[in-house]
Length: 292
Ligand SMILES: [Zn+2]
Image 1 (cartoon, rainbow, N blue to C red):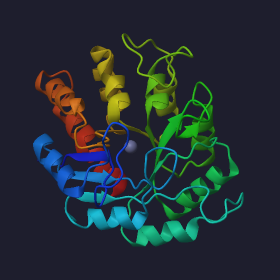
Image 2 (image 1 turned 60 degrees about the vertical axis):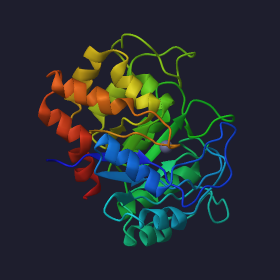
Image 3 (image 1 turned 180 degrees about the vertical axis):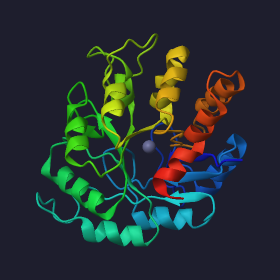
Image 4 (image 1 turned 30 degrees about the vertical axis):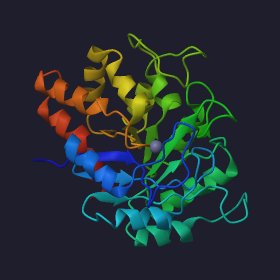
């Protein structure tokens, strides 16, 4: 059986301060229980090193230590904030990225800093990731403030410029502001969960067609909604980009729902996508990209 790999998750070493919903991220043991329930063999862990997203910040070392509790179940990423070490506009990130790569990290992210794609700090980080050979998982934001993620104008122009400028860097797309653009979006829909039929002309399919270094992370409500809101369109999308879409759940708290598992199983079971497409999206693509 081909492996099932979750491309996007987070972990904490121990429970601490809770958010206003009374939640915090899952421990390694809680994640393994979810993986066993959902039939997931391995899970990519993205350290939470930037202040914008959650109610806590963790170090790469903490995330790595949590992964090491179940070394055969977790795939490590590092996460380097573009503002690290003096917030410089010309910082060289190669040394730190190479350090984490040598420790076994297979990628960089989730990049959630609320900076513009073209910001020199972000660009230097991309240069480093390209040189060291670490794929980048990114969260797109549709605005600055009250938000996390790299800020993009409508149409994902900042991402497109980066895809062009860093052709050897593999970009893994994620978030509402990314997945809402599978079709043309109004300003109200952008960065949310648009419903109903997907009309042609969206930025995401165009960028996937034009740039072989763009991959899609189907995790969270955003990725799941992109393929589920218009199932016929979703099956065709999964089939067209079967070599670059990757299954994921983005478990941010142990109680998070996992609807993509059923959607993918049902799609394959009913013959709406082939077994080959299912196997690639559920794990073979992640294994090929991350060389695991
Ligand atoms: Zn996440």
